[in-house]
Amino acid sequence: MEWLYVGKIANTHGLKGELKLLAATDFPAERFKKGETLYLDVDGKKLPFEVTTYRPHKQFHLVTFKGLENINLVEKYKGMKLYVHVEHVHELPEHEFYYHEIIGCEAVVDGEVIGVVDDIFETGANDVWVIKRPGKSDALIPYIESVVSDIDVEAKRVVITPIPGMIDDED
Image 1 (cartoon, rainbow, N blue to C red):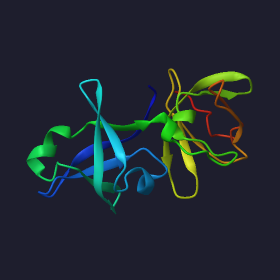
Image 2 (cartoon, rainbow, N blue to C red; image 1 turned 120 degrees about the horizontal axis):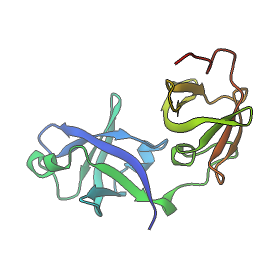
Image 3 (tube, rainbow, N blue to C red; image 1 turned 90 degrees about the vertical axis):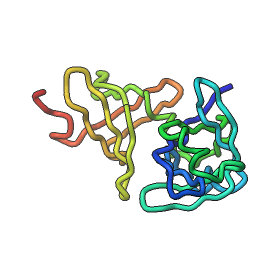
């Protein structure tokens, strides 16, 4: 079975079993809503947990799981990753992609692989892709049409047309 990483338990919150999540999904309100099942990776096994409450809180997302309404029952899950079945992803409009489809893609400039997309973060205006480059500092690439000229998720390859100075460094 294929799994999709959707977040990580950062910490507990309060005494009633609430957990602070760092989301790795574009749809946290939908992914973490009441009644949804999330799977915790516990010692290599995916264990199901049903969400009983959800609310956004600052940069975090707070949830409680059915049967775990006490801090003593949830503390052991701090730092663990959350997953859903990959078949539970939604069809996205054209030119939109899930993070897991982009992370791991080779980044190509002028026909040469310069690195691999290692992370994505949101800035408000557009996403920024972190390109890990061997022997050089990471390159930060804005996901805008004028810079990212082609995406082939099947081939795990993205073509970048950098703005002058964007990737030219002397590391």
